[in-house]
Amino acid sequence: MGQFHLFQTQKERLRFGIKGTYPETLIEQMKGKSDIKHSVNESLTRPWIRHYFIMRVLRETNNQDDILTRDSNLLEIFKSTIPLSENSFIESTLSSWRMFLDSAFRESDTPWYSGIRKTLVHDRLYSAIEQLELEMPTSNPQHLFGFLDHKRELRKMPRVPVKLFFSLPGNEKEKILEILRQAINNNPHNIDIALLSYCFFKAWDRSSEFLELARTENRNDLEEWYFWVENDLQSVGVLKRDARDYPTSFFIYDRALLLAAEYKELADWFLKESEFKAAYHFYYKAKEFETALELLQNISVKEFGELINQRRISKGEKPFDLFGDTSRLALLYQEEMETLRGFARIRAQESYKQVAIKARQHFDRETIETKYAFGELSEEEYHRLIKQLVERKQ
Image (tube, rainbow, N blue to C red; front, side):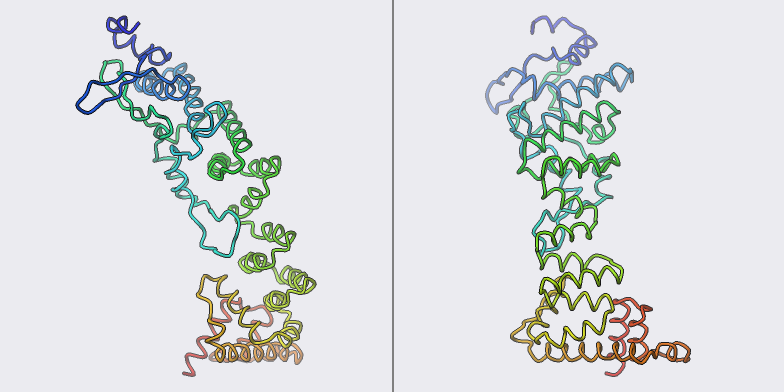
């Protein structure tokens, strides 16, 4: 048969290449020695070779039948790049997709979070889809071999643009998703295959199906990560509350943007759980100043210092040395106590109207605290203005 190919035209070899009957062997080039010929692995290597011939023809004709052949062959290529029982799970490292995954995701700077910390960078995901190409998996021992093209010139294994997989039409798209579902089922400890699956679901506006898949597979880690990567911190918080993971619940809810009533409900829960520092923190955020003051009066300076460190860690700041900064912590504790008493006094005296109608050329501390107490300033604005006052006095 190999001798027969010598007498074929280039066009005939192209067509045999598309059908998968040409070439019959691969070539391993040896330094200073004769080249070695190898049989083609039909399931793991042949689809990559076929892709080369299919694309050569499509560049010239754009024939619909060849497009269908290309799409069908892309499914076979895809199967060779992920761990499946049919390829003996050899591609567990997802070497073909490594650059794509590293481009689309980054590690979140949240050392306090024990779950999957990967977050999707949307711009980089779509840039990776448009620009990157897949190479044959390094787990395939034939990935460095060459083959003879229709002109009988030696070629390296082709690369496949990632966007071809994401551009597949309806039926093939469903088959891709089914392959991914199977891979997640068969590889419960492989997080990368879950990340890759999410990329396809997300790019095709079907990310909620990833959540359904996680629940079907009883993958609590992926269910939690779905809420995490979708930035649904309230749902992550619910899972952490159910698990009685108090430290992580604190950080999650401190980052979530909640209404005052939601902060109060959360503070009530922490109080019921005897997590007094967290309860105080969220009563403060809910502007429940009287309750917060009562709690703070029963929290020691050391406990307050631990809360200060939780707040700083939540913002990505360096925590205080609780043993070396005792005097500073005592001062911060007293300042916070005085601030809360000021808020409570303002509420009790109902002095808001008086302050609101009085013209002022600048903010003093009383005005700032009043406006914060009545919801006219955000927490960030409040702390910024207080800092400006302190700097002016210095």
